Image 1 (cartoon, rainbow, N blue to C red):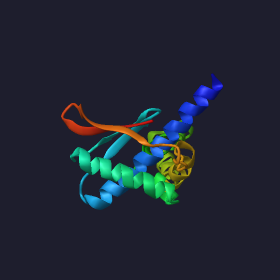
Image 2: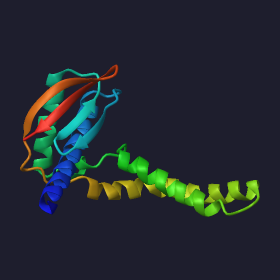
Image 3: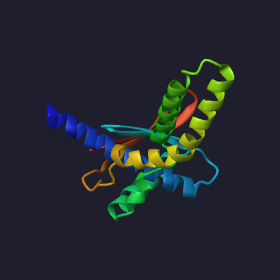
Image 4: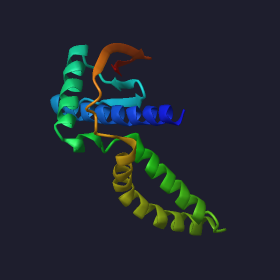
Length: 161
């Protein structure tokens, strides 16, 4: 059971890295367009107004570039890990500073505490992505890419063997 859980986590981390690398490739090829993704043990879903062939090429190039050693592609500044890191740190500062009784004093101490958190949260989030992604993707290959709809948002589901 632990081996299965470890394997699921490893695959999710690999897919997360490939998702980030794919978004880097797509963003370079289609400046001004917005892309986002969500990874799981089976693959990832990527949103963006593109055709299947563009996604297929980007995923293939992302995989090749990661396998060639471009491990920095596994990290992305707009990753949800960065957002969660910022939110958790800000919430902790708010909890610690909420002990003051005076509203002005609470506001001022919270602001003073949140400012440095906001400065360093992105760096901390990027550091944590080292644990939520794995650029070691030599054993991953694409099984299929299929268009999906998420409400009115266009997306593609990328599955791996």
